[in-house]
Structures are given as C-alpha cells and as structure tokens.
Image (cartoon, rainbow, N blue to C red; front, side, top):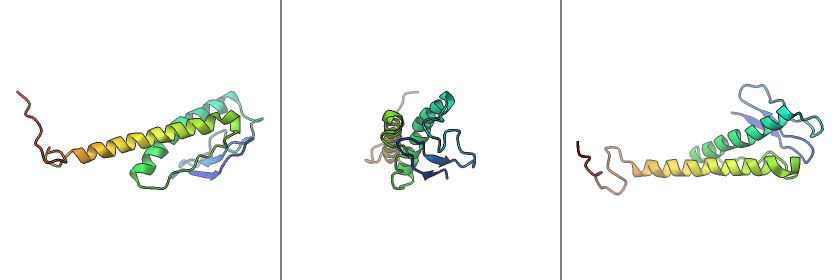
Length: 120
C-alpha cells in the first residue's frame, strides 16, 4: 500500500512513497524547487490518488486518510483539490455499496420484489 511518510508543510510537499517504491518528482520538495511538471504531477495526484483513497477507505472500512497537503501549501489548491476528490471517491463508494444492497442473488431486489418482466 502506498504511504504518506511525512505530511507537507506550508513551504514543502509531503513525502509520498507509492507501491512501486519510486517517489514522484515532487515528493518532499520545497516550493522553490518545484517545476511546472511537478505542479502538474501534484494536481494529478490530488485528483487521482485522493479519489482512489476515498473510495478504497470506504469500501475497505478503513479510517479516513488524512490530507497530506498543508492548507497554505501553494495557496491551498492541492489541499482543497485532495479533499474534493477524496469525498468524490467516498460518494462513489457509497453509491456502489447502496446499489449492491439493492441487487439480490437471483435478481430480486432487497425488498423481495421480482424485477419487471421484459418483453422479448
């Protein structure tokens, strides 16, 4: 499982080690060292990884993953993006979990009703 080793501060990115073991280029960098590519990678991480974490935390009944970005790091953009996409992942997981409760083993719904017949 990927690990956030150290949360970021107002002037530095968090230290993040993915499953591959190769940290992203921005991991642990100061705001003064970040390149445009690093900023794009932080944005992608804040959306993609946060979304997956939110979904997986809910489905695997894990405690919420804390936001690794400081509220003032890069004017708060990575922090708010991470929060937004983490919540989106949770909402998707809640929806898929609820939908799975409505689908019975033999096609009946959770309420015991048979599905409507489909004309052939």
